Length: 396
Ligand SMILES: *Cc1c(COP(=O)(O)O)cnc(C)c1O
Image (cartoon, rainbow, N blue to C red; front, side, top):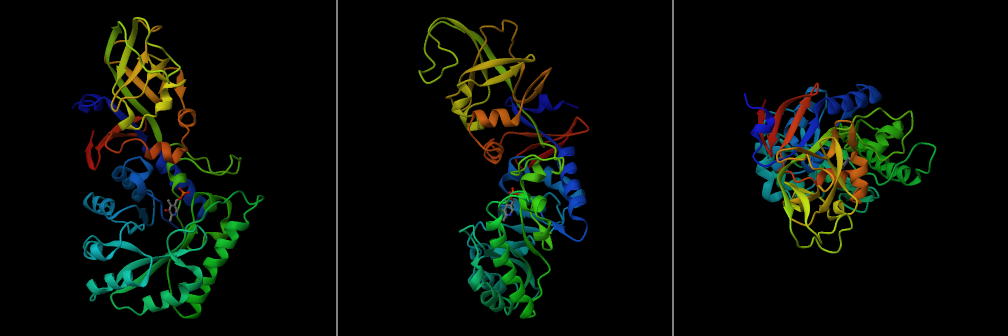
């Protein structure tokens, strides 16, 4: 059996800790109990963690529904054997994909009557579940709360569909003792819809408003379900406090290798890089990680990677698939050495917060900015168990 390192063709990979994902959903379950459903948000390639194996663990660990970004991701999950109900967040105009939703048993997000009608038209025999999104204050997708009761009542009369859920998305929630007026205003508009539908005898099994921050900070607005995204992957927009669930970061490391070491005799890296100037002959190392992988230009302005357990400065990150290390002070570094962009090596650690701050990205941007085609290697009990190249997963 080959080791995962030997299975990689390009020397660039991301390591994901499946135990962290399991830990995080288990903590959320303990927090909300069994009466509240949990719908992890797994859009954007599971916030960069790779969809299929992440969702396998979520299914095994008691997720009730998955909030998926696109029909393509929904199909990939079905083909991988995922049996959970799959909500597809708003991502197309529905009518051209109506049959696909039925065929793969995917739940569409309905934003207006005509979309529900297009599902109804192709689903006349067996009522197909739909979710309806309400706009409560994010200024974006969904039926305006004030018009929702009337529109949803009309939708409910269509044959071939059943309204399985109603949800909205919050903007900005903080801890309970801080200013949450906006969140409570959004929740009031949502409640107005919920009460209006209840008084029209329209029964909906799933009402959901709470993302990571609201799920944790405001237990009274969990309705019948929550939709945590960031918490599943181990981070949170709430300020750190002891009462915060002890989430574990799912991104274990991002690594590459030295593919060439050389003495360059001249040339220039370009004036905007302050770490090193290539004005005299010097020793450099080239790594297989560049802009297309998600490396930021700013990595070259004070950024480091780890090689042989030491912090090695980046000289230049302006190529699509390579970056240049300054090896002036590292005569032992050789071709094939493992290079850590984020993660641990020996006694040194480059944290996710450190590298994303240097690149001026928030954590969601950082994680989803890692090119999805870079292989994800999944770890359980500190051992690699599977490797995913996009949606092709191999057990190790
Ligand atoms: C992404 C998403 C979430 C999750 O948000 P987090 O802040 O990452 O927890 C919740 N609801 C909807 C509709 C989303 O699109």
